[in-house]
Length: 169
Image (cartoon, rainbow, N blue to C red):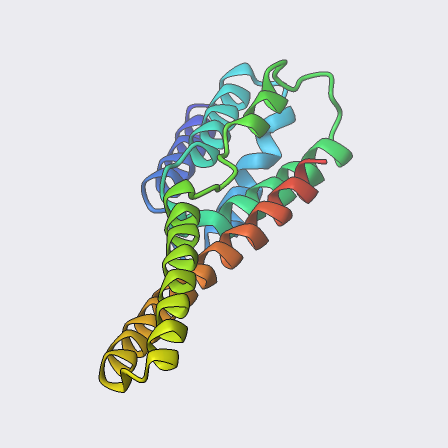
């Protein structure tokens, strides 16, 4: 029993300390298999590992968190619920739905600034001030490029949000 507890403890610490590990999914499958264990120590260790992994603040682990939710889904569907921790499903609220308000605000500001620059360009073009028109046009193009770069990040995080919500539901 000591060897079994020690090996599970080692696997849990491995996946918690190195979540970018190549074989993390295999380790997670082994650990999550113990979520419905009759042994209280194994069950608590597996549950705490699940909680820690889903609460991990690293935004580069979004794909891994989705994998964790899929594995949890499999365990909940296939294993007996008699021995599972009562708070097991509380872990579903630990992950953060990624709403990057700063990026969304930056895109809004960039859009507003682009509209203002466009209006200035139209006025300058009508007045015949082509040199100033070209300068503002270049500034507007730079603003649009920056907004596009931010928009790609928001699209990616939106995709992850949708995947997470699907797995939870």
